Image 1 (cartoon, rainbow, N blue to C red):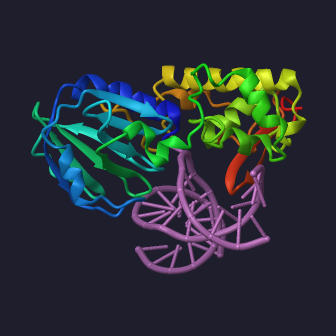
Image 2: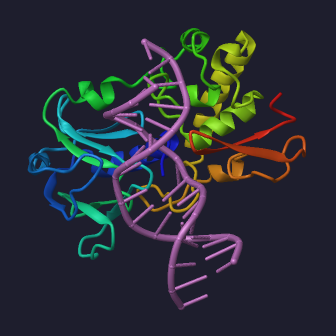
Image 3: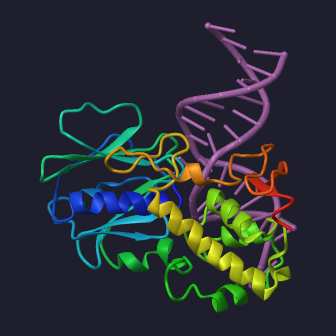
Length: 271
DNA sequence: AACGGCACCTGGTCGC
DNA sequence: TGCGACCAGGTGCCGT
């Protein structure tokens, strides 16, 4: 389901509702995730959640600077904040009972997600440590971006989707950013000119910022903690529009598959 | 060492 | 209505 804008939307929705609360009971109905849930998750109980943080597409419910729940929504993960006594439905795998009486319910049909209790050095966890810079952080500079691309032969679309280069750019926003920058997705990364690199850098920031502003992209069932959908899908220029007319130049949008992911571009706009 | 391929899952949709 | 094929917003690991 989520790329960075969706996770950030969830984080912003969740923060005011769960910060300061503690988990009074943690019910695990299904523990088979990308990494299985083990008993240590019960250690998350009875400690106030100080902060809801995000690193890449990981959500961090921190009970201290060092410890907390690390959550990933995978492709299909979702949170619901519910009044108690609403019975769980299919794929409602974990309930966090909060001290304010609400239930934070984790739903994930495909179970590509994860929920782990990390006791120490949460920020340095192996799953976070190898991640590249946050797109809106100072280390993700044009200079850094240019250096990364200079030596890489792989297609530019795959480069910008690589979380070791920059976090948060998934399939939707990779397609959109390349369209906005006017660059074909198959171009070898090192073939981009400095001008193109600057345009793409800006396009990544613009696309992500706009998507966050719109509350993310709702394709099937994405919704924030309050159950509201996102609206960025109304601003998609290429993703999901293969064989339709380009909204800018009216040429037919072409599609191909890269790493088995749908890739859509405009032969007119993306020189 | 960088990079492509694949596996991990369930559910929805489409064509027959 | 049923069935199989294929598709879906992610990512870590494996082999080359």
